[in-house]
Length: 254
Picture 1 (cartoon, rainbow, N blue to C red):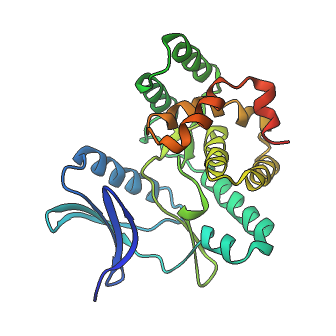
Picture 2 (picture 1 turned 30 degrees about the vertical axis):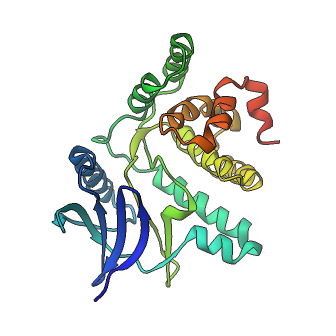
């Protein structure tokens, strides 16, 4: 059977073949990063959460490849695009899936605050600003909720029976669920979907009891972390968030 390309990136290709899903990395891609991603997948699978099962790590055409179960269905992103009239319903389901995920514990995963501190140290921000961001992290509650780190509609697949699967655990950590929600909120903003971001934030707060203030205070930290990727189209907006004061941050949801 021929490969069915699911996604192509400069450094990796995801394809389905013979009922399995393959994530094939280009030669030269960090082996430790690949193994770390596979480990994350295995650790999260052990929580009992609904995710594709990890099957093996192998080499295909000389490229390291992670092999998992293939989930036949549509992503939440496609469903939102095809049925805009169902946005509220689908966003509610999206939030409920995230809230359920965050009830799990995965103590062997990297701590989110450690990852954020490392990312901020990698930025080209001034020493004073880096110090301030490090202090902001230390001032947040120390939680150990399962955090996806890239929870967006393209990483949730709904199969024909309506069962939801969460995919792509590359950035999984354990930490503050407000931080994970802030990451999702930021991703919507970076896509230019401000209205959807607002709806999402309100629904998440209603579902979890988290306050919008406790979520929004993570935005400068996450913006600094995102800036390390050096995506030119995002730079100006990210720097605006990094330097934005609390009152203006809260206005993002108004």
